[in-house]
Length: 186
Image 1 (cartoon, one colour):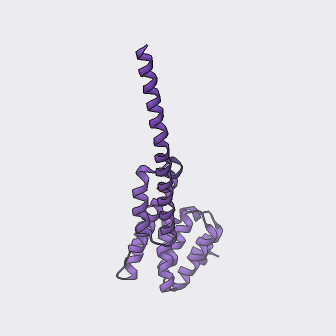
Image 2 (spheres, one colour; image 1 turned 90 degrees about the vertical axis):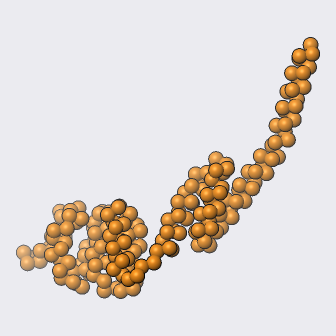
Image 3 (tube, one colour; image 1 turned 180 degrees about the vertical axis):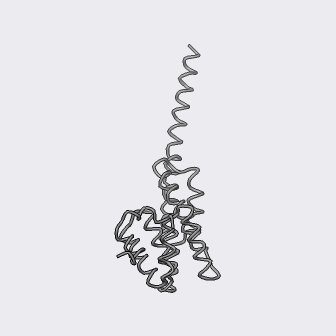
């Protein structure tokens, strides 16, 4: 009989321990939620590096309902922090960086870099050409043609380069593309 009493007492003790830990668990959950909200606020304010650090601290202990979102926001913070850290000595370096992004398939960031070049110099034919390449590779035929027309108007050599550029292979069947590259056959 004594064993039953001791077992019952052990059950009561473990139940009491559970009851005592619930408020602690709720408090930890509440703190995690507050940390999450603070990190999101930092991100919205454009303080990506500080938000990144906050999300990194949160993720190991984040409740399941915040974990996936925290990871997505962490990736966004890392991406934006990298962008703001980029400093180019000249437009040529920025263009080279954009081309490296195209080559690795990071079309969104490459587009941002090329558009940044155009903000500095709207007549940068090579930036229009690069945007035409991105548009071709991402299936945006209209935009591709617009940028390629501008690139050729600014520098007729771009027409010759585009004729042998494999990045435009998706445009090869478009008659407007052919007319643009081979106007002498009309």
